[in-house]
Length: 573
Image (cartoon, rainbow, N blue to C red; front, side, top):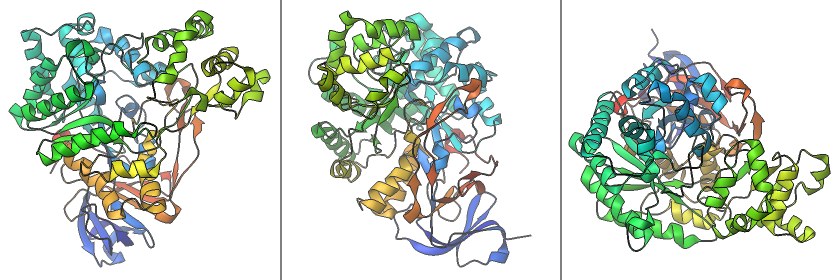
């Protein structure tokens, strides 16, 4: 019998511990790193030649929405194409358990706007062989998986289960009995393996609204409720919380960021557990926004308060049509005109009386700094082809129109089929360097993997980090990058024996050629259930990706192996 199942030979090991790189062979047995050193090829059943390549721990993505996609795509692409070997699902309070049978359709509709997951795909692809959260975990456990999965308890279905949908969306405080029942559900879920709970709390003008334009259930969760739920983690001394938060201005006085900071710190102190703050994002036009957040996260670290900043570390640009676009939902006028059927949207977006309010989108600076900068990528109507590859600003000047009118006139004339592109608002390397090198150690990611599939490809973030911040601009060392992409998020989330390449750790491994690492252009593929399409970006340069010691991808080709695990309570130590 061979000493090793797999031998990765002759590579440069960057082990994720921040220790200097070294050349060595890596021997894998029974899914774990068995030995590192000068090993012999005849000792292994399979040898992977890693000469001239980096051998490093697989990447850990704490912010995904693969809760539906995992049921039809075991590899949770595009993330796994880019070296991600472990993910966290159930983020932002969104998910599919617990859900009563009569609310299954409504639960799927909820995800169509806020996370832009196609309804037809969910309808065809979700097995719905569960009702309760423990039953959901059992269903995930039974599915073949090409990556490891750590599950949050999403609070939207929990609140709906306890309070009923309408009452949960009303914004009223849950009763003492209802709060007690929510806590019981979280306890039960964590008994069966959940890693904590999550919530999006964006108020009545949520930037990520429900399918009908109303706030999501958790958008109206009160601070008192969040603190009561945080105490569950304190009682158990385990788990962590992921939360996005914009406080309700009607319920506090003073600065919104001050209130946010106080609330997150209180959650951390009440629970005694890590709190993942979503999100720190650079906007090159308004750098003081992210700098203030960084100063706060650094202050928390110095005071021993475990609030960690999940950060958008990739360039955020969107290719979209107005059939799918929803990221101006924080503006009521835009939210209203982008809900409903395609016919309804077309009528509302064409209405001249609505345009004055819609023009105010240029004042937000959240997703795009200026509508004038948006590009027209492709028009379906031949008469509109003349606008392709022009910016909205150029068209507006040419036709003497306001930029919003120029954009919407083209979109509506084209039956909302026009493809636009919003350029990234975070391209300055010096700004991203401030974020990445902060003493608060912002966590890489916010991939949103599995969500916004028609206009965003955030699953590429790890590849982009290695190219942009290590190879091309030398913002951080390779050793620091692999600690930040693997060990750091694994430690924050409670993954057991993952995120580093040390003897005894689980063998989640990437083998890649740094000099030839590449992100391929965006493309449209029709690979979702019910014939639905999505935008993807593939990678080049990954020679081998292993999950629990088994090869899932070799030179970009899927092997068909599904060694991924549901990591209950962080996984087997």
